[in-house]
Length: 328
Image (cartoon, rainbow, N blue to C red; front, top):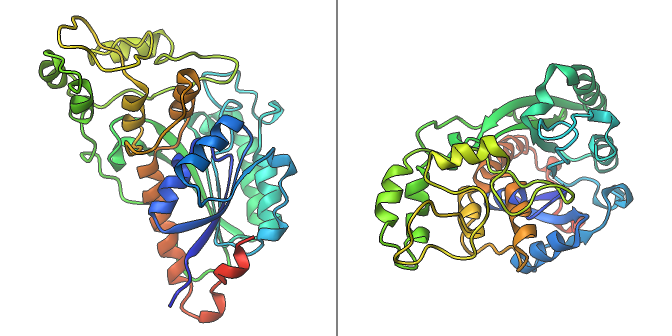
C-alpha cells in the first residue's frame, strides 16, 4: 500500500492552499506561519496540523528532508500592482528563503504561488534567476497563470503557480484542465446567506448578481480595512449590487433597502472556503485573511495533478518515502 504523500508548507496564511492540498490527499507534516492570528486560525480549524508559528527565515528545513511536496504562497506585495512592486528589493520577498528550503528539504515536488504581477516584464531578470536557482537544485520547472473561475471559484482571481518536479521522478506534470463554465455566479453562491435573515429582496438581488465576482482583496497589515478594496474594485462590486465600502456583521434584515454589504462568511465562500472554516472574531483581520488567501479549489486541482505525477513516479517501491520518517 502506498504511503500518504507528505507536505511542508511555508507562509501558510489562513490555510487556503493547505486545505486544498489536504483535499487533494497530501498530509501536512509542518505549516509555517509568522502571524499569530493566522496560526490560531490554522490550529482551530485543523488541530492535528503541526503549525509552527515562526519567521520562515528561522525555519530549518533539514529535519523534513525527503517530504513529497514543499508548498507556499510567498508574500505578494513585492510583485503586486497594489504595492510598489519592488521585487527582490522588497524586504518581504521570501523567494530566497523558499529556494533555501528546497535545498535543505529536497522535496520531490515544489509548488509556489504568487500574484499576476510576478509575470510583469520588469521582473523578467529576477524571475529567470529564481527559475535558474530551482533548476540548479535538480528540478524541472513549470509556470502558468491560473484563473480561479476556471476551477469552480466564483471570482476571476488570477494567480501565478510555479511547479518544480525533481528530475529523478518518473511522472510528468501537467496543469489541471481549465473549466471556464464551472464557476457559479455571485448570486447563486450567496443567495442563501443573503436570505438567512429573511431579506425580502434576496431573490431579486441574486438574479441581478449573475456574474462572477471581481478579485477579492485583503490589504496588508498596514493598509486596507474591512472593505472590498479601492474605488475601481468597489465600482465592480456595485455592478453586482454589492456595497463594497465596508463589510457587514450580518445579512440584511427583512425590510432592508439598497445595496447589501458582504459579511466575512460571504467573502470566504467566494474564495471557495467551506462554511465550516472559521477565521476568528476580529473582522478586519478575518477580511485580510480571506482576501489574501489562495482559493482551496484551485490548490486542490493543482495538488491532484502533482499527486498524479508523483504517484506515477513511484512505480518502483524504492522511491516511496516513509510517512513515519517525514513526520517530525
